[in-house]
Image (cartoon, rainbow, N blue to C red; front, side):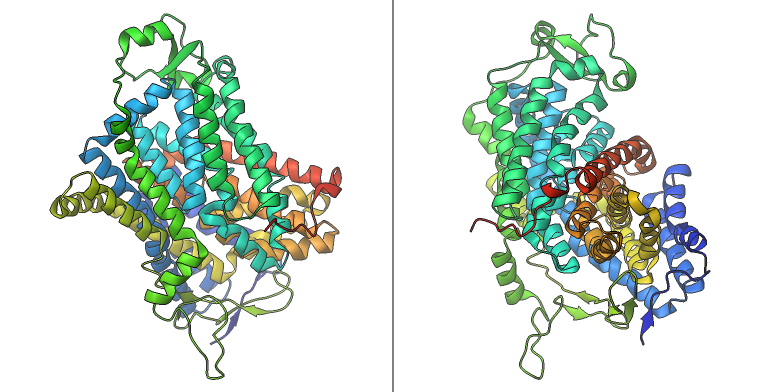
Length: 589
């Protein structure tokens, strides 16, 4: 069976686009408006997408059903497994009492909540994004912030905002590798171009993050630290993406920003210590903060802090032991993400990883089993691609090389080193599994929705609407990447969906295709905080399943505003500084 995607079944592009948005309206209408549980929202959204695809876009029923099943299976192994393992590690730290020591050690660096957010959500989160990606930063950093005493809502919302600038190089550069493969442009040029867009936002996001918590006055009280965090990360991100490689950009950026910030805080302290209203302390003498800060907290002097909040000082050995699980996690996921290690693990354990054809050549395309009925059965057509091309659908059961397995192994090693018996580890994991069961279902079904959207061509219909914006395409093309991530939950998936479309459209409009393909990934990172998958991960990791709609309403305007900033930057590169877009760049070997 072969089926070619249809992009304008009504003969009126605006009507076809409106119908293609129905699954999105259903998903977020139920999630935000009616506050239905997320797994039911995902099922309803996927069902709507399948009905729209079959009834209006003439997709065969078997293809619609199979694409949904393929997405669910993909979500279980590739994403839900990461979140489950990360929360398991957190539960081990709590069960062994190490989280209390971690909390005190961070408070020993700084008791100021503004600075703790910068250290944990931005710097540490960027490192985890670079090593693991796919929701791991929100899950791990969110759990860590709860251990530090943040309310679950604040931990979830602030981590979603922080997990933006690093996303384009997440999971050891997979989004960039995918973008280069799809659009057929040099990976070094794409990485360097993104590395000239996102470092600007890397300076803006820490400021934005703190301003979300407090007033402008209280934001500028820690402005020196904000500059250290943002500039150290931005400079590293620019240098590594332009001159070294596209794999370790975020890992190195996270490491450098953590070291620079901790060193800076050894010599500089804010005049006032800012804490949440719910922190255990008497009300400060100063007036409460203004605006949104009223819902977050207030400020108090260092003297008040010293009098009313006891901070335990632990020996260095105990502090290192408390942080050991996350150190092990960082090392394991970094090793797990190295291409050579992943390839070796896959070749040793993954069925059908490498298939030799009758002519003796290795089968091209992605590894894994051909998904029945779906593999190469769906064809993308012009103008989305240069010429009709089949969509591969292969499921690689990479159970050992999966990032989630690396996280799980790190949790097991940590638990054993912290003195838990195998039986205690089993009980802890069972507890984790019970409280995460609905979140796992929701995440998997969100991917089912995304895959139905992809294979039915609904995503391309929405994307084509952005191509009608003419001279303003650099701005709206950036939001095409934003839309791709908002729909699929992944910058990698957004690049796979729209990379070719970006190149074709930009060439037709006389705009640099390197810039627009890079803009797809750079704009996509700002859609990360509003995709249903990330919000579900955030609520699951912070133990507040059911508050997805509240969190979405809180972060959505941040996402759109930051996406607009990226769009303006891309417009400037397109029309004011076109020579700043690199071509023919070669990484230093």
